[in-house]
Length: 341
Image 1 (cartoon, one colour):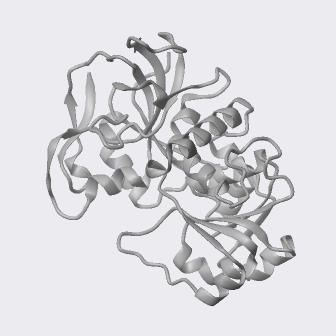
Image 2 (cartoon, rainbow, N blue to C red):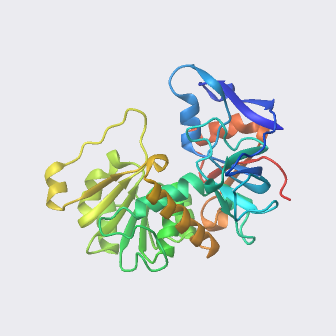
């Protein structure tokens, strides 16, 4: 089979298309024929770490993907050959990612993809949607798992609403019944955020964010899903309700956050830092279950019409796909691994 492999960290040029042996699933495992692989910032960051370092073993990149069950290992129930599925955290703590024609994964990382949803949608979930769920479910008084109405009566501010995590946060918050406010950097991104379902969209380059958020949520917002906390922290504290949560899921290497202590104490603010790979097992199970439920309800959609434009590459073009994400491509970058069945 064809696979993208890298044997040392470095720039995208370390990614090479190679022939790779096909392996059978063991007990508790499923082999999936990939149709689409999704690229996230974590994929290029883990590949590029500073300097060039030889890896202990060759590695296939990319965490997210969608495809069709090809073979089921012993002891696996609930999946049959031909089932459409989406995958999460595939390359985490291992060497097998989704930038290859087939991948063997533990059965718990395989989730049914409804017939009504595309492989593109399935490959766009994973990191973004599971991160967004944790960000929205971090309040001290819950809910631990989102469901229809679980955020009713609450207001959510999503900074960077046109990004992949921001897009998923908007859609999940709306599905759970929250009023959603988002900030963006321009008219194009504003339109995308509206298509995703944001009720109030603020251009932070031309508008007073604090004033605009307070106009939309006079009592303040309950949850802030923040893509750039160092730049937003002062405004966040001004618009957050007492007892509210600031969920922080993104940072540049070596970046720090200066927290205004007194202002945070006064409002009893909760700061929730999020790396989806290392959340607790219970938190991950809640996230996967809620995302699957929202997906089945048609609440998670991708593509330009739904606020998340798709940029496509072939498997051989995986280096260019990684570069596109590193350079800040708007929307979601996908790799077409094989034709859909």
